[in-house]
Length: 169
Image (cartoon, rainbow, N blue to C red; front, side, top):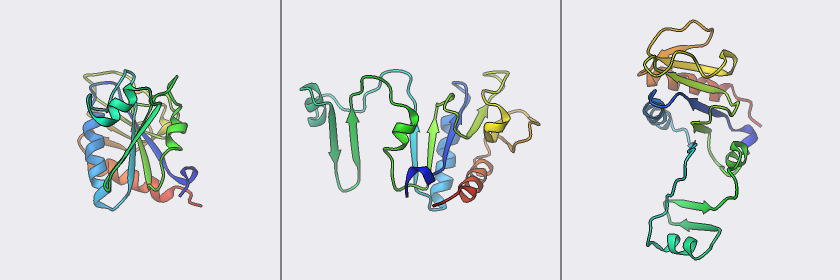
């Protein structure tokens, strides 16, 4: 399956709204329905997934620009980049999934599920025409399905509807 035919949904929220918690629960529900899922997490800061002293870390420290590690259960590729890759470039690195979820790409323009917590902000990040659904601790009447912030089943249901409505090749 090419990524042109793979639905992408961004989970967006202001920091501290609970998007990671909701996303974890939605992923678990989608996995229970046998969907194969990729998640792309945006990090505005430096991050390192390599463990100091391990072979892959040592190879990167020696100057390798790309280090990959493969086992029967996992594969990881760590690539040094000169500038942050665009979301679509990262999406194109992923294959063989039914859905790509992103977390934290507020400005991506991708269809989104916004997580809103009134203690964290007063306005939505997204225009309603970009939203598949809204998960909130207060009621909204903006013309899109609105679920309680803890209703992972309802949000997962909207994701499944979106997957099933997505044009396939």
